[in-house]
Structures are given as structure tokens and as C-alpha cells.
Amino acid sequence: MRWFDGMDKQKTRIHAMNASVAARRQFLQQAGALGITALLPQSLVWAADTEPASQRIVSIGGALTEMIYALGASQTLVGVDTTSLFPAAATRLPSVGYARTLSSEGILALAPTLVVATEDAGPPAVLRQVQAAGVPLSILAAHDRFEGVVDRMQQLGHLLDRTPAATQCVDKLKADWQRVRAPILARKGQGPRVLFVLSHAPGQVMVGGQGSSAEAMLHYVGARNAVQGFQGFKPLTPEAVIAAQPEVVLFTEQGLAVVGGVEGALRLPGLAQTPAGEHRRIVALEAMFMLGFGPRLPQAVAALDQLLGKAMTL
Image (cartoon, one colour):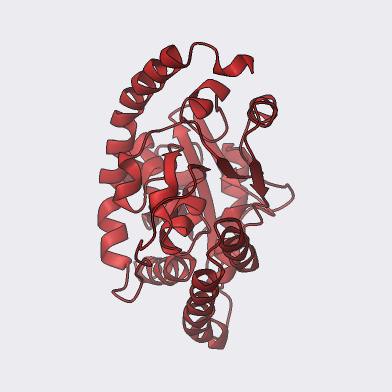
């Protein structure tokens, strides 16, 4: 196939690309490491890799990569995308770039026998090129809910011939989920009104609306999404922020760093004129931990619940 022409050049390009994303990875790791290690319970462990690799897998999506480690199949990984930041060992694997802006050359240069991705991966033309090159491609539904995490774990177990390990992981997920959710469901009264702000760059500030992964997390901790009337994410406007009157504003740690910390957040349009701004209730969690919907979802819900509860005491 034509995509394999000049493979040596492609490998050189992939090495260069890996170096270019190293700085970004280091920043994200440093921003999230404290939150991850402080919140991860000792009981959350990964299965041991006891068998030699029979597959060469490229994993596109941080949550899928975490699941492969949880299944004890990390020795099959030959490449990951830039959202694969946990566990730390994943950051030392060759990178194929950001999940939504992939290149077929970067993926094919690693000679994978299987590419796994969620439906968020793209662009579609690149995925078609990978398939046309004869590489099996498995697209798993994103579905940012607990049930989606369970489904993806089971599907990966089947794809990687790790069904018993997947069953064990799912059993543990369900037990952890019950333990975390029980006290939340037992609480009476309404939770706080929370505005989720997503920022990739100072000029790219979005808020999470209905059906977003952020809203799903808020519902899981009994909080209310302060903005309604639209699906997904849309640009932040001062009028919408003031009308929402959030009691807490939630960022990813990476996003809060981009806007300049709490002081920078308070300078965002309209935010200072809200209860959250007046009381400086600006909080954050590491992006993939909070919104990845991977095997750490129960721990992420527990951490978010604790974080919002603490903010409301300010």
C-alpha cells in the first residue's frame, strides 16, 4: 500500500513528533500529578503483564490506554496519543499525536496489528486511510457515563483476549462505584450550582452545557449544571455567566493554569459578578482524571464531591 512507502522517513518523522509533544506532556503531568497521586487509593492496581506480546496496539484515548494497563496488557502497546498521561509509563511510549488531529503516517509507522480508539478520534479520513492500509481498527463508543466505562472495559477485554481480567476489573469498578455513590445518593437537598469552564488557550474559553461530560460528572456528585439550553460546549459570554449565577466554577487544572490561576479566572468576563466569583470558589481537577471516563471514574467522582463540598464552606 502507498502509505508504507518511505517507511524509514515516516519513522524519522514520528520520532520528531514525539519530541515535539514531550514539553506538552511534561506540563500536563506536572499539573496533574499531585491530584492523581493524592486521590488514587492503594486498592487501585493494574494486573501484572505475564504474557509476551502477541499484538502491536496503538491506543487513541487516555481512558482506553488506562484500561489496557488495567487489563495487564500494556506489553502490547506500541503507541498512544497525547491524552494518554496515566499511568506514567504510558507517557514513555511513542506518540501518534492528539486524538482529534491524527496522521495516518504516524500511526502506520509503528506497524500496529490493531488500533483502538473512541468515536471522538479523527479526522475520519485518517482513520479510513489506516483501515485501507490493512490495519484492523476498533472504534468504541465514547458514552461518557459509568455504563460506558463498563462496556468499553468488556469490549477491550474481548479484543485483547483478556476476558477474565476484564471481568475482574468490571467487578471492582461496580463495587467502587456503589461505595462512592451510596453516600451521595443518601444526601438530602440540592447540590451547588456549578459552572464548568474549559480553556485550551486564553482566547478559547468554553462552558459545558447539557449532555457534556462535565454535566455527567456534576450529576454524579449531586450538583447542578448552572448553564442550560444548549448541548455540549459553547463560548463563554459575560451575559451567560452572570445569568447562570454559579455558586462554584470548576476548571480542569490545565485550563485554570492557561487562564492564569484563580486571579486570572476572576478576570474572565462576568465571572466576578457571580456568587462563585464573590467568594472565590474557583476549583479544579486534572483533566483526564475528571473527564476521561476511564477505570478511575469512581475515584474521580469521590474527588469531585469532596472538592465541591470544601468549596461551599468558603
